[in-house]
Image 1 (cartoon, rainbow, N blue to C red):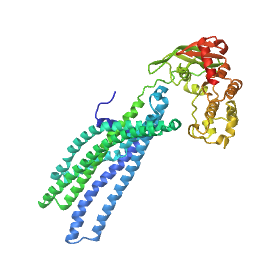
Image 2: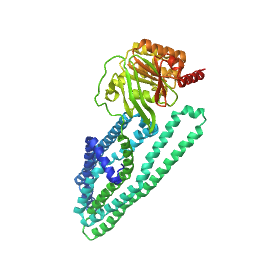
Image 3: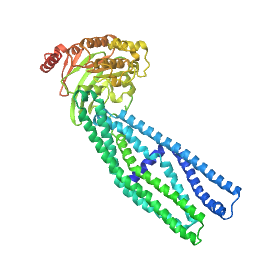
Image 4: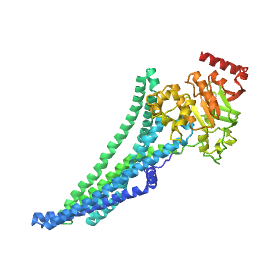
Length: 583
């Protein structure tokens, strides 16, 4: 439920959480700002004393060099203390901000890893990138001036006390500025909350369009959609520009008014102060000190105003992050973290049903796969084959029923056991923009011999060795420098290096020549002692498996050997369609 409290209240709550997260650097930054505030008040006192005891006497009857030296030393001393306070404040304020950015980015990326595939399907990649980049930046933008703004309260208190001690009459003028600032701020924050929220949404939209166009560059170019993609991005960018202009107009009104209010107060102080000097109520040095003090009060008011002007955007961005942090995770941690014994893994699917956005995908699915068995999962497009294999490695949980490996429910299985014992290779093979060796090893403790053996089983060793730098060849982004079949074979070799006891191939050899595919499957059966589940579309592949599971409309309608299922009309029709497509 959306928080209906004011932007200021929500902002203060967020800032309090930031301070609690990294209290030490923030405290040091505030201490530096407090030192600067005290030294700044000291500067006004020094100026007043120098005016009365050095400047006026110098014009009237002269002063000694010792007096001048004392005045210079006082100015230099307070200046040095102020500079030290500024250095400490800026360094540790920056440290607080950057540490908080690191904390939020780590949290958001960790959250992305924890959330199920359903969440990632529902949110474009550009939006997720915008959360981790622009939203984190905007959410922490207000942190940098915060230590100074916090210590400014001390400066205002010191200045107000000094004003009252110097001349209570003029102090009333200075203090009267505060209510005006409060009214202006409340009006401003109400005006900018909407535009600030829409700006962050538009940034996500622009990022999504840009990411899609770049990621789908091949489709864009082959279909001649360059102009349309440019127009689509221009439209989203124009919406972002309009929202930024709307926010800029609000700031353009608020900030000049914020500057004008203290200046009006200074003019009143000079007018009334001059009259007070003419009456002998205060000295010229007192007036100089009061004007300097009032400028000190005016500057903090202006600075606090700037913080308040940035607060709505920070609040909106942090609340966008909170939506991700509070997203319901459908994959709870294992309740028992059980482990299963070594050896090939048997699979049991018990009355499993699964729906996506309310539409049934799998219904009352039940079957067993014995250890070391090779099983093909076949069926028309859209019957839930890919969904099934994703459930087998717990990329999501079924709505009903259970999936067991070696008699252990996946929901009770230690995550480490599952990730090291079961591997899935997808049709779309993702490779990193690094060397072939690093893509295969992934920081795992494997030898060169094991790497070459896995590549040989995947029928990849020969073409990798023929690359310009062999296994040290750096691939392009997503492995674009390799063909589709080569990428699939590298991805398979990578999975084999994990020594999986359950290997699932989701159409993972679709881009490979049928002869090479047959060699791969034969090598898997000969060299590995593993349970193999293959989502297959080629008759040659299906014929190499021990058993076939035929899915239709989310259910297993038949199972058996390839030859025995040819008597099933729907299966026979599908096989004939595969053969025609391959011809």
